[in-house]
Length: 111
Image 1 (cartoon, rainbow, N blue to C red):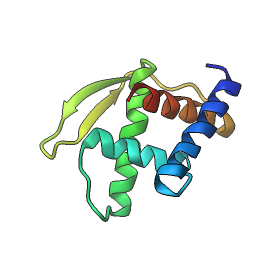
Image 2: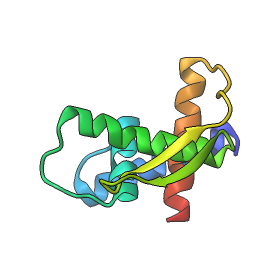
Image 3: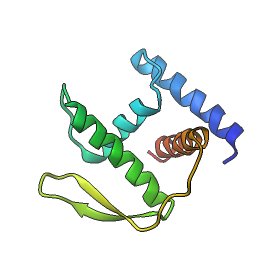
Image 4: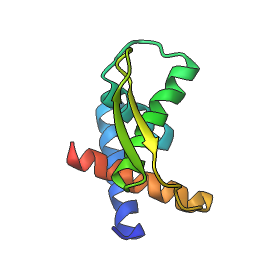
């Protein structure tokens, strides 16, 4: 997907959430939402560390999609785990954001 297509879909996705929940989520908010979806645990208040762990779940899922991670299963607390099987390429901050946006868009398109 080209950067222009990603940006167009990213804008549309954020606008959709704005209409549904009254806020435009940023990248971190989307990673958090995807983590919640993947872990399947919903509660009113997550601790800061739990939020970071949920965002890590989303990034791990994206790395797996790129062939850089291997899904290992769930632990005894029902959290999914991945093993990094190849180092991700070094990217600039802007390229990292673009990579995340493209995976977030794809995640919601496939949902």
